[in-house]
Image (cartoon, rainbow, N blue to C red):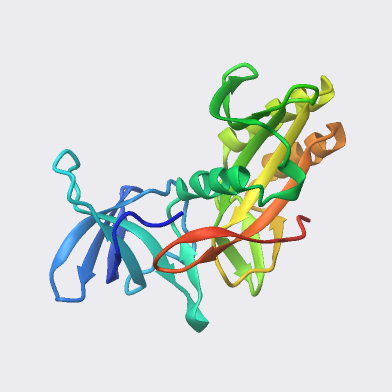
Length: 233
């Protein structure tokens, strides 16, 4: 996934109301940027963090900038745009870059399933079980090299696991795919201390037959693509 316009360097002044951020551009001017991330963004939203923003010239949108990347120590990057994960995974599915999910002719995003949920991708192929694929963007890391999900309590995420467990129990194929959107991690685990209910639901879903996959994203200021698989503990 390439960014639509070249990213610009900036410094974060503050993040507030979850979806807004005051920023200072390299020329010294200040602006408000959209932050497409409803989570806590622990370690990514401290004032003074060096960030990358995308300029938007669409007159229909209120904000001229969107916050895309945060710089980490050691020259690493993290993508703060949770919506980017689905775009990256869709391109990877279409290109056949996820071996466990190849061989499906139809890739249908945002399909209703369960009682009141939408699956990120429904994969279909005659003669095969449909694959229900839920994608989660991961940006939390409290230990060097270890990514964690979630970064806050997520009733929605727990509901998704329960719905996926239901699919698996009925004989369908249910897949949870974590995309770690930071370049400094090579492992992933569940943050059970942050959301015990999510952790318990994941154990239950895996017992029902849920497949859990994880990949790290390859991040640059020009594009985000799927990177190597990670062990999903």
